[in-house]
Image 1: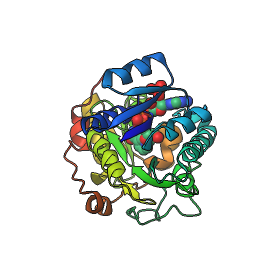
Image 2 (image 1 turned 90 degrees about the vertical axis):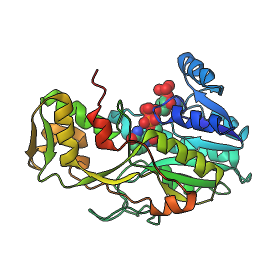
Image 3 (image 1 turned 60 degrees about the vertical axis):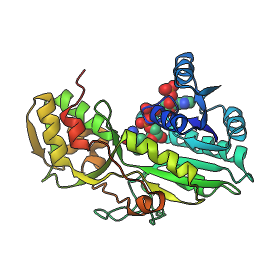
Amino acid sequence: MRVFVTGATGFIGVPVVRALIAAGHGVLGLARSEEGANALKALGAEVQRGSLQDLDTLRSGAAAADGVIHLAFIHDFSKFVENCQTDKCAIEALGSGLAGSGKPLIVTAGVAGLGAPGQLATEDMAVPPNFPFPRVSEQTALALAGVSAAVMRLPQVHDTIKQGLVSLLIAAAREKSVSAYVGDGTNRWAAAHVSDVARLYRLALETHEAGARYHAVAEEGVSLREIAEVIGRSLKIPVKSISPEEAPAHFGWLSPFATHDLAASSVITRRKLGWNPTGPGLIADLERLHVS
Ligand SMILES: NC(=O)c1ccc[n+]([C@@H]2O[C@H](COP(=O)([O-])OP(=O)(O)OC[C@H]3O[C@@H](n4cnc5c(N)ncnc54)[C@H](OP(=O)(O)O)[C@@H]3O)[C@@H](O)[C@H]2O)c1
């Protein structure tokens, strides 16, 4: 297949591009800079120059491909609502390039906000009407008329350099010189190694099922206390429990996440796609944290 990949130059995008090319697929990767374009060419991909805001570029990139993996997102959380709207328009443009073709569109979402607090998120849970976040990638993709879309819900995706929201916990720990967790720290975050996630995108594309929701979850939940302890060891700083009232001052906008359980299952995904994650766990990667 010739696959149009947005976010192809990113943390997850690069291993996805590698996994697709290694399996014999062609990749047309979106790049918004010369540097990104050169990096994609070095991986053996073709390049579509443009940004998430260039809707014609997204439409024509999708139309020129046999399938699309959408990974790009603008991670400037000070403009989160605006960036979620850009993402929605981008998904609609990708969809319009594929409409009526039966070709797969795989869109990226998260495992947060699906069940009741403390409930393990499963693939058969649809996004609830009272979804608490402005990011609507999943809802947008699955509502596209005539488009064969599926959703990849991600947990904290990690290696020794980047770890999703855990990287922000590390930044807060560095800034405050203390690694904190809230209360008894038994709330958990699901996780997966980036190499396993990349393989799962390829499997989802090849075994395409319209309307499917996949969970790229290798570990159902790692407790925030364990995460804080390993961060403390890696940064050689103290670890402490803080109260829910102290959490906003320590974690800033991340505070609601730091106090919540974001555990998720991948039983259905593993059964459907024969996916068996083999990469290192989150704690193992944090033990070997790349400290710059
Ligand atoms: N990493 C995680 O743990 C995690 C967890 C849940 C969900 N996700 C989601 O998974 C996806 C991939 O995440 P990631 O960790 O790989 O992110 P990342 O490393 O920040 O990569 C983001 C990608 O989006 C591209 N991009 C950003 N703004 C763009 C724009 N205006 N136009 C075109 N491209 C643009 C970037 O291009 P440049 O290289 O040019 O900057 C890069 O290729 C995102 O949707 C993210 O929200 C990630």
